[in-house]
Image (tube, rainbow over all chains, first blue to last red):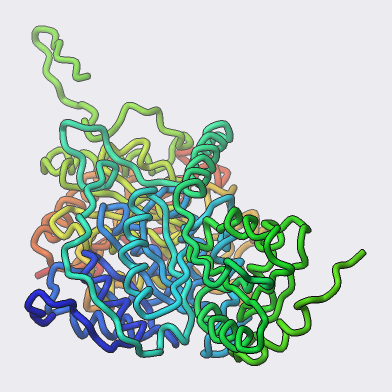
Length: 363
Length: 254
């Protein structure tokens, strides 16, 4: 890309295209994808810019099922890999994602969510929270899940996602949505080469005479061994929970009502905060940036300082279950949301706030 | 460890390839897998490409192939071995990459991946072992089970009107421009084992020259699944499988 003469590389870009450019600058070595709205611009951008990056493998697979297994192979062979799709396509990848979690293969998986269930709609949604955060595929595994709320974070989370997935040998997911993928915003692009290329001793790179063969597998047929693998995975997830929680708190110092929202809805909630404060209602916002690990401790730290929590999501209420786990019944936890590709307005969230604020405590 | 002690007047006429591990194989008596593994590893030994070869194992009887093959290997999800091999080969284009798959894996659940991998002309070897049955799961009907063949899920024999016809996937892939070398072999006699070995050698040679996909079907047996002795199984193979799956090259460079 263009020479910026030492100045920050500032662009006006679509979320999907910014994410694709970020992946190239983050040293991605292979991308396998399949077209699906609203994320097809990622594959289009990468194939258009492929000739500038002959060292990067970019391939349109015959299906999402094939694509995730190509990612498995390329990651197992030691390459920095990314795959992107939208909700129905991510569902098709779930088997492969479970295999990668078990085989401990790093990869960056991007879900630019659309409304479901089923073929649903192509409009934005946050309906895949459970799938991303609680499992989705079979077996006990976790993804590291990052929730961007701006085009800038679509870029930043690519670098962070690669770094975390390689650090922990675990697939990481960026859980975006159709609005973040399609909208244009100002973005500062980091320079290429700032993320060191991986060098994995475990990768299938060809068995030299000085080491044993490397095997990438998720098959451990003896139950005693499989349990040990599970215990090791769980220990890893606990480490991630200790070390990698990211959360932003806005206006929480004097808040009576805490909004809890991630991604696009956290942007809408910031407008609700302004509207509420103009009316004299003290509203703050807790924005989880990592959905796994979830910021339980941060949410819990406000239990004694607010009257109530209001979780706002573009789904029927999924993250609200984690907010309730954090609050442990010590305060009311309310929910409001829209589904099926509909986006809540700041005003309708405010109306919900007004129904819950300064309510007398239940006897 | 190689035994270097050779009594006076004797010479070594046979030895196990060093690229085959010492792990005892779990295959049933008379099964073709052990022979095919051994021949594949022997070629890798003789071509001196152990350090440059990456294998992909399927789901099926050969799911533990990586316990026996002393090369870097990846275990794939059921049907996806050629997609995994594509991923490996694309980021390691100078390595030799092969997938080792059975009929259920390659010709049922993985049909899409098989067709498209060959259609892209991926520079890999796909080694396809066709014994007309799901061995690992206990003898169910395979896409390649012959008409009339009794299996645990076609207990009265495979019948075309409801179960379809045995799939000649090798004929199918031979039509694709990405396929460079497509051949059907067997390991039921020593002479056939030698032919298979030549086909594997040729495939790795073509892979080095980046010619496209090489696809070798080995029509093999399943004494346990077919409920026969090994000798009966090989006789049944000649009498029933070969007429439907005739041996020889389907596509070969001139």
